[in-house]
Length: 145
Picture 1 (cartoon, one colour):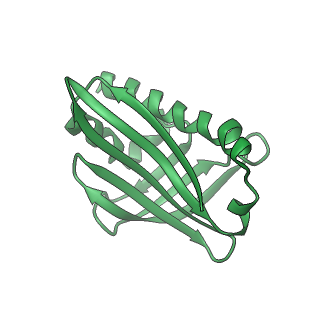
Picture 2: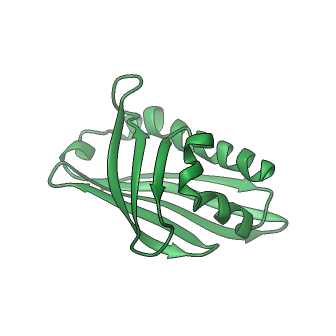
Picture 3: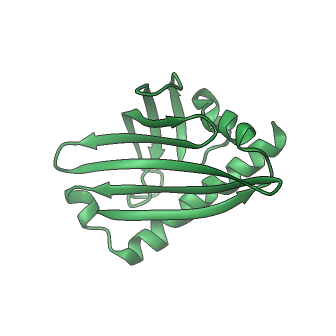
């Protein structure tokens, strides 16, 4: 299993962060990694998403239907996608109240044949910057909401 973890502080309540995270139809307006998404925000919901492939050639994207596997309002959101044998991933966000804002833990757990080819250096150099960009874009979007 390969793991990506990023942490950020967002100066807004978990409720405000949650509202942006679960407005999938608006992802195209702000999210640099998950550039399109649509679906109903509920436990077990199916979300059609197009995301940038950080390990692919520049501009490469993947479109997939994922399932919301964790849906705890204002606390935790995760979705899982699968390509049998080749890849399975669980993309997740955890929100924790902290002072006047929210501590965000954002990452992904991935496995399968494709994920096995990613070294720790590749994860740090190609993936982590995209996840950190999402964190910054999320904070900016929440500030405007």
